[in-house]
Image (cartoon, rainbow, N blue to C red; front, side):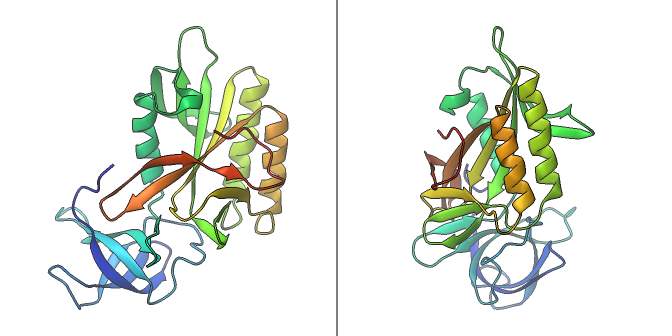
Length: 245
């Protein structure tokens, strides 16, 4: 997926109220001026929101939007990037599923986004194909890395995430396929694990879900200021159970 408009480099001043950031674009019509950008990530963003960090912004000309800029990437200044937009993984994965580009799920021809299931919940994708069990796919955006080469999830306590694991487990018990898809929006990671110290309850729920038959897929992304796309499967760190591919 290419970004709709060319991204502009900027410096982060501060992130606040979760969805706002003061930034200074380096190029473009507001170069050198402090402006407010939308931060499309409600998570803790550990290690990604340090003042002075080089970031990349998308400028929009939509008069209906209150903010002219959206924060898209963190630039690690070593050739690697992290994507912070939590909405991008679902859009990118939908295109990949419809193109049957995910080997573990390529047998399914019907892709239905945002389908009701569980208890007042919606699964990210429901996949259907005659002769096959329905596949319920929940997508998680991964941006945390505290050790070189290791991506982790979650970056904060997430009761909602644990609830989704329980609902996927219920689908698996009913004879459906249930898939937890971790999409790592970092280009600098080769392994994946759960951040058990940050959220022990989520790690326990993940273990229980796996025991109930929930499948796990973990995929890396390729990222740069031109766009974002699926890359290679990530290797689970020692101690993480699951079917990766």
